[in-house]
Image (tube, rainbow, N blue to C red):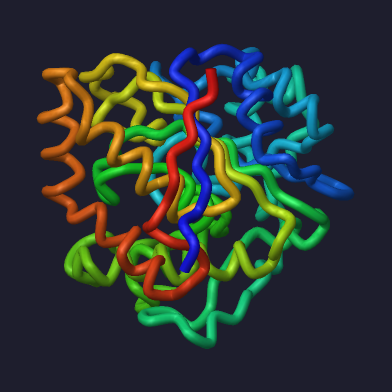
Length: 294
């Protein structure tokens, strides 16, 4: 298999986010949805809408999110919509809470290793293409969060999040978090789910990872650790597996003393297993060429 191209720039600016998108030499057609993390209430690390504004305007995108399956301010449409307003996403963008109204949309995953369906917000079918605009950081359950997590947990409805976390054992919004799935099964379920979104937007999807505010905790944490590493840069690719592998490699190869804390979070959750499982499904590659943009 040919190596996937991953573009990289060190300087993190609004303008360089657009530059990294343009490096892909593609145009996302039709109605574009932009999947990002809008931040839990109290979280200090999520990337703010004013920073994302030029890139989202560039593709004339609609910001899309889905409800969560755990306690917080995003586990019901009413609370989530209020938080999206409080965080000023609705001030700058059209925002679509894709599972605000049911029924959910089920996508088949015939070759899924663990799950054979993905339960997503039904409004995803209203879009022609997708930009996955990820804040790359750690994660308390998945080890790290990047493109693959945005594709899987991020696009899943509240029901769908329970389904992925439980490796297909729980199909409702009342998630029971303990002793349902092994960690590897959870990672494999994320890979399965991610594959279905890539298939849905086949050839009409692009990925940008922004490696800043590098906390071991996700933007879904209301009480998150402060960043343990200095910012690294921006990556772009049309391959979600390659961009996450390159992002992790940049952390591992960093000279930053704080990387050990970040790596411990990734390895204690076997986070790279999601990348390995996704690679086996064949919707991308771990083999990549890193092309630095000046």
